[in-house]
Structures are given as structure tokens and as C-alpha cells.
Length: 87
Image (tube, rainbow, N blue to C red; front, side, top):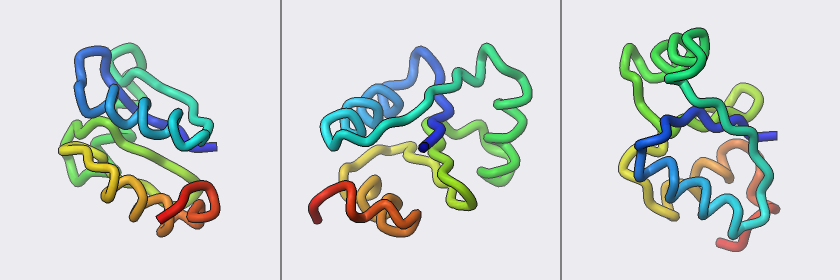
């Protein structure tokens, strides 16, 4: 399952959640403002930046900041989840 690191105020987080839901892709959400260890992980994954939303699936992680559906679908393919959504 995908883990999505978010904040409550982030418009890109809302867009990513909506897109994943529309594609029927399950995810778990973790608010980095409520979980300091999650905030630290996001910073490690994003070269010191607190970039949200950050998606993690296995060894694959990417920030979806400046969200676009094309960016999300590229990451889903890279993470081996291409079967979940049409091109």
C-alpha cells in the first residue's frame, strides 16, 4: 500500500488524494505536522525539504509537490503500479 505524507493545509495533497481515489488506488495518509518522525523521513527522502505530498511504496518515493496527473502516473509506473491505472 502507498503511504502518503501530507499536511492539512496542502492543496497538492488534496489533489493527489483525489486522483488516487479516482484511480481506485488505496493509500494510507500520515500528517507530518502530527508525527515528527514522519516529518524527518520526508526531509530525508526529499534532500532536506519538507515537501508534501510525498508518496512512498516499497523502495519508491517521490514528492508530488506541483501536482499533475502525468507526474503521478509516471511515479506509479516507476513504482511498479502501472496496472492500476490507464496511461
